[in-house]
Image (tube, rainbow over all chains, first blue to last red; front, top):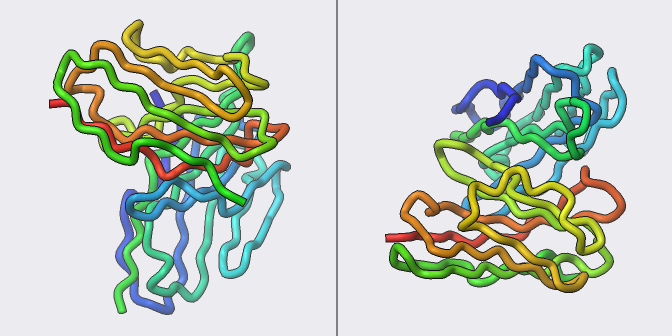
Length: 115
Length: 113
């Protein structure tokens, strides 16, 4: 099963508003990534974070790797209709001996932008 | 450049039938991943390959599922026999040099009746 808790599960916002979503885990992750999935498509990588405390932007998107390495958040500023989709966090881990490295995905945040 | 290519995009089959899903990774990528996505369980890693060698298949549900990567440009995921609970969207993804920055295909929506 998944070990990442992503919130909120869904959001309805007005166009132009800022959005914030986060992802937490009880385990330490080495890497955090944020993906966006639109209907009928596969997830698309938005931002990758490799160091604790790292803050990275991609246009109107900003993501941070939590200092404890157990959380990450994604902000979207000045939302527009094409921001609609499901946003997934993903982390490499959790760290355990003998396990192959892989990404674990959160359950997603469904974002709806109202005109 | 072409992205990850999956076929078919949609598959409807009857319980007990064999299903084969196909994936062509991005040229030059050395990692290939198979995921399954359902409403109940979200996005789950089934298996991944590095340089055509299976590295982790701990996510493969049971013996009915098998995956192969005969060369760097092709992989298959086979379900035999299929069951209604296998209904899901199956994604293939690939990456270069790392497991992190994965590029996903459009997925195959499988319905088993």
